[in-house]
Image (cartoon, rainbow over all chains, first blue to last red):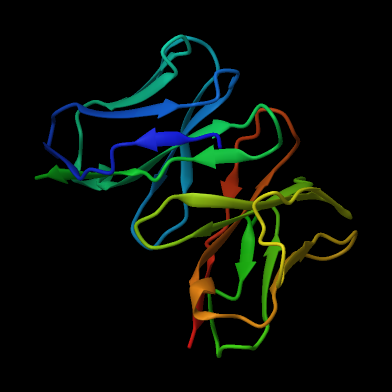
Length: 111
Length: 114
C-alpha cells in the first residue's frame, strides 16, 4: 500500500514567521508532487507542484523535494492568519493513475 | 463559472436509499476523479474516469458503489442502499489530460445518512 505521511499538527506559528510543513512518501518511483491547501469546510486548492529535486519558489511559498530521502516540504514565509488551513501533500502514483493524499497538517497562524 | 461543478452541495438520505452525486468537469477537461473525505482525514481516491471509460476504480468499494462519465452530461457517483458509514464529503476533481495531473476540485457534496 503506497502511502503519504504527514504530521497532523496542529502546527502553530506567529504571524510573520516561517511555517515548515513536511511530508514523506513510500513510492520511490514517484515523479510528481503537489501541495494543496484546504480551508475548513472548503475544497482543496492546488498551491504548489514540484517534479525535480531541489527548491521551487512561488511568492511566499517554497516547495522542496528530495527524492533520495523520499521527502517533500513546503515553506511559507511571512505567514499570515489567512494561511491558517490544512495543507495536504499529494503524490502521483507511478503504478496507476491516481494521486495519493496525505492526511494533512493543520496550520494555525496567530496574529 | 468555468470551475468544476458539483451538486448537490448537501444530500441527506435514510439508510437503504440511493444517493446520486453529480460532477461537471472544467471546460476542456476530460478526466474526472472522485475522492471521499471523512472528518479530520485526508482524501481517499475512489475512481478515475475519462469520457465513457472507467480507467481506475481501485479505490471504490466492490458493492453498492458505481461511477460513470457518459459522452454527454456530468459524471455520476452512485451509492446504492446507503449506510451510515457512507456519510462523508465526496469531492470530484478534473484535469485536462493524464500525466502529471494537477487536480482542480469542485466544492464537494456532503452526504449525510440518517
